[in-house]
Image (cartoon, rainbow, N blue to C red; front, side, top):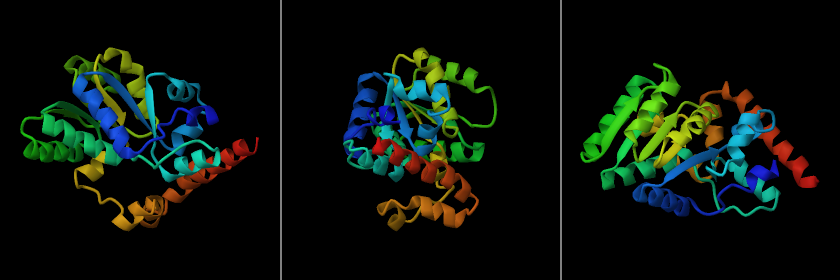
Length: 237
């Protein structure tokens, strides 16, 4: 597992955001993987996930406090967690200010269309295209997106499906920042409330989600508690 952690960006969220903005401004291609315990655990049993995390094309950031803690346990440098929702928000605003082109794929129609409407209201110069996450063949949609050659592509289809989709079609793109964002469109559109500031500041958003949706407890155990257990084993070797 340590081989994946060694590829994780060790700097601050601000530093990585500037790196991604630079790629967007200069017309370079950049594939951002927001690594959480779920995809890291998947790499232990799924060769596709392993190849993705070890791919030279993947720029990996620590999305989740469990990943940050794991890197500390392994003695690897890390500054802070870099959440997908915060990074997506910053890149959208950066693209808006610069009049860049953006494609949003994922979420329910009412969610993604509301987000597009809000972005257009704030940034009239931004070129926006979108498709919800429920209709159509995703591989065909990605080929259509590649033809449009947007500066920023955000895919909200859940981990690790969104990362696999981007990775399959990455070579079709000659430029643009591409990133999987999970359920971020729900929050960024205003359709779903993010955890209160106290939970965000103390890195306990996971607790807020469990309190609101107790059904998440089983998933949390599987992807976080077991994950840290595996990391402890690796750290003792």
